Amino acid sequence: MIVTNCATGTIAPYVPSATMPWTRRRIAHLARRMGFGLNPQRIDEILDSNLSPTQLVDLIIDNAINKPLPPEPEWSNWSLSNYGSDTIQSEVIQQIYEWIFDWMEEMVSENNFREKLEMFWHNHFVTRLDDYNCPSYMYQYHTIIQKNVLGNFKTLTTEIGTTPAMLIYLNGVQNTRTNPNENYARELYELFTLGVDNGYTQTDITETARALTGWNGFTEGCAPIGYLPIAHDPGVKTIFGQTGNWNYDDVHTILFEQRANEIAQHICTKLYKRFVNPEIDQTIIDELAATFLANNFELAPVYRQLFKSEHFFDEANMDVQIKSPIEMMLNYVKEFEYPYESFFDTNLNYNQFFLRIYFEGATLGQELMNPVDVAGWQGNRNWVNSSTLIGRWETMQNLVFYIYENYKYLYIDFAKQISGNSNDPAFITQLIVDHFVPVGLQTPADYERATNIFKSDYVPANYFEDGTWTLDYNEDVVAAQVALLIIHISKIPEFQFV
Image (cartoon, rainbow, N blue to C red; front, side, top):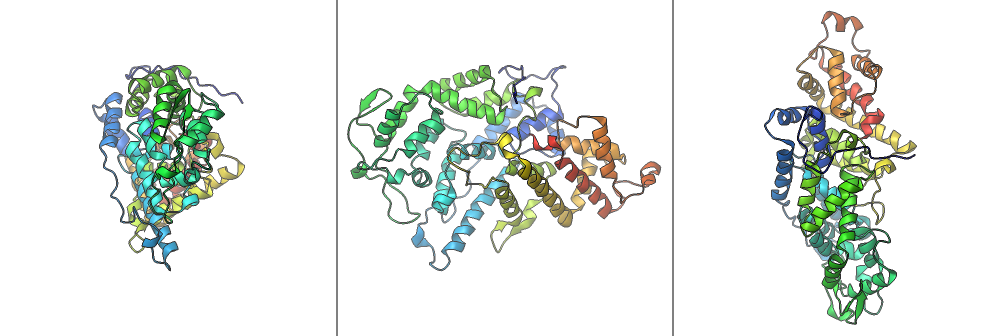
């Protein structure tokens, strides 16, 4: 199947016009790409405000830049000797869950652009928690990403390579002067900076591996991994035509000097595919790459240019990507404004609701901190096949019923808020459908089908005609009506897109 990018907008900032107005759908598009969605009230507030699209994007990015890092946990530098011998397994699990669930809570916070970027870069500079299984290593790796996702890409690349998580996952601790290991050197070029077979040779990989030696200072499990000069190869190496006694820092200096254009193209292409459209527009990528280079690999100017552009807001770039499992669930939580805080377990010190989402995501192929392999989750169409699609339906049904069982009144409040407390089932249905599926349904018959599901068998048909039924009709019944409609929406193909 051939798919093309039909967007025609340029990289110029989007200015609302009669032909391209500032609408709820465009606000929802921005909120879903730069975060995990917004509830109807917040979308209306933005639409009614004096903020232009450009000002809104700047505000989102500035808030993310100024957002403080999470508090450092007490176990941030623990090695195995810090754990009790009889409780180590339970303590490790507890700490991992604590950190991941706090991260998920930030994903559905008001200011969550940084967390959306963390998801992207976590899937770019891949490590797998299962391969090192140390909470302290996980924390250090993730914190490097948090600190740099709105900063400098060269700094991020340089710092991530010496995290214990990466040194173990890509065999840096086995890379010594007497026995070089090329694993990290290869992925540094192939995946992290240049792209497959793009501007490097096998000789460059071999020589780079030699230059990266020395990060072998390993004393005990989960302890810091330091640099050992004696393990470093001091000999002459030639990398990208540059010859000298190169070390770890030299590699990154040479890489970003000699292959700047290739790096800019590779990274801007990945950003475009993830945040705009899986089918690239090379003209837009060239513009982004030029901005990336002009700003010495600072990421924020690229984000600003991309998300402000009329190209980003082009109708053809909306609802063209399939949500990841975690994105699907957290979008629903955020767009419904579910009170997840109520399920914090003080005995376990983490949120039971996020535990549920974590395991549902893992079942559907997206376990946070454990991408499938070094190339990461490939995303988009790879998220859906005959078995995972059914799993996604069941996951959403479980979430909907979970909310119904615990907070059914929220469904009624949601319907009242989005419809202005209307008693017209067709009007209410359309607004709820269009909130969770901004692209809308394809035909009037599809809306009619959804309305019939919303009416349900729990309410006599004549009650809708004579005014007996309202959103205050019966808490159990009305909440069930909304829940059944959302389950129906979650099975509509368009619901899978963002």
